[in-house]
Length: 373
Image (cartoon, rainbow, N blue to C red; front, top):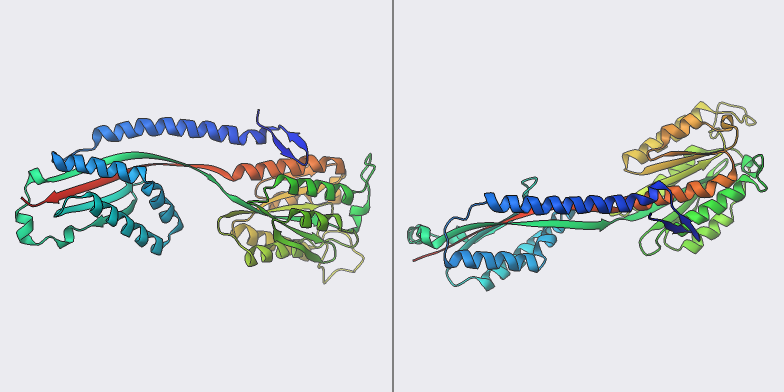
């Protein structure tokens, strides 16, 4: 069983086994890849032969051994036109260094699964009609080589913790020796300890009457935990502005190679801003509820995943249906503050499982060589 250490605790619930499952999937993919490579090897045709065939096979091996195929795939994924041209130049230099004089070539590297052409290169455009007439079938060869590519990728995480610090967070749930804000802060700090400072960033937004960005996205986790420790509960519940603050922070400091996530905790009802209600009203305000729905929809449209946590023994004290509606990756119910640490650890594990992925392809190198008599 796979576990994950967070804040000194060893976590062993089922979500923590995600990496084991993905590793098993990778093994299955690899076995399938070997089978498919064998299959492609049997159906691909070699036209021509002799010395040029031997040269073609040697070139394909050099391309594979020098890691050029993985470089090509990475460049295509990044959609970097300049890097693609640089790679084509590198491939051209390699071919010309390996080929005999007056040898013409056409090479393509493509996906055997999707058919996508990753890169093509040729010098046959320079062949004139006279030279073409001098080429015989014995002096032209086309060879295709299947290469199985399995890439293990680890993504970065950018997570913003949104914590309710309204006045009700100063209360204790039945049976809890400490206040809800105390347990919320301890659980949030445990979550931060689960992250990888060399790769991940964490930010903090808190809210009551107004929301504040207490700490922007950073890998200085001690700073984040100090900001969490400094939270003081008072006031009403402005959920919408809290999500807006998170959206603004992601927009200002976005990393295109990171998974973006919000972990949202509240024990109350959306009641601020509420321009049409008396100031003392604590119940749900339609305007405030609409605000949070609009902001979470913006977050979702930008690819931000959202976890929500409802805190309180009496589920009528917070809008459980709202929390279920705005989440994308899970709603969690904490009947008491003591349950928060376990919930934050579970969410941390779920996020960490998303950072690991396996990409698989069968890449076909098709190489045509020709030379005059």
